[in-house]
Length: 307
Image 1 (cartoon, one colour):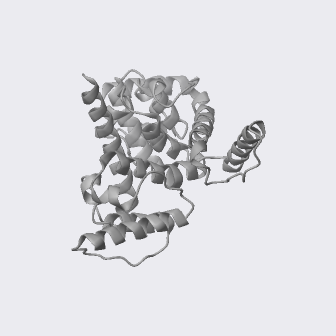
Image 2 (cartoon, one colour; image 1 turned 180 degrees about the horizontal axis):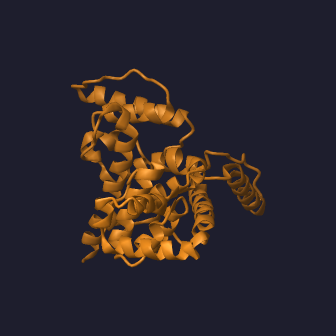
Image 3 (cartoon, one colour; image 1 turned 90 degrees about the horizontal axis):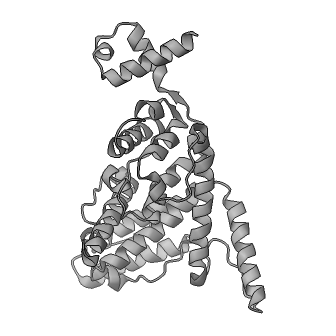
């Protein structure tokens, strides 16, 4: 692939994944987004998204016919988002009206980071204090005493904030992965074989790791995502094939993986084998004729537990 093809595939992964997130947010409204760049142009979708994210209402044109009406909708949505504490950088109403794909995807990431990733992180206050300390030390070295920002960091500190978020997510994920002796140093390449995601889901859904340990990466990821949705309520924000792609970036991965570090998730505990054992021992015909891999694994567990 040449550079342009690589860039296009990377943008398509972002676009698909961000669209999945938007559709999850919009689920209560029954609205389904097919193409984020085209569908956001009237401002109606952005207004609905902004209201759901901020839990505040605004008046907007529900069926805008004129350009100025669409622009007014977009401006109202952006203002509402910024008033909620999400500092928007490098995006304006005109960029959305002209369907600037790169900037629209950048806007979606800013929303995802603020309303989804940042809100999922544990020890948020500790992270904020660390960011403040780092910025204060930097200003002191530069002989400055500017105001230290809290949630809304200066644009020059955007990279520091992203780095701190990444470190915190990795720390929380590794606490869960340690149960299966798995450790990751990043949010991309260490996840490509599917083993880490299996181990992560297994923290709450016991048995999923052993069940698909010998499967190919796509199947590991796909089945882990199914289990995460069924038992933990975590939506499949990334396609399995995209999850293991060399082109997926840390932003997109953090959108999905941050779902697993939410406080409410830790309290959920499911044992897949308990249900399988009950069905197996009751001679349920479905389970007796089920995949041989499951039966062999079940037999090993029954033998192990009987000792």
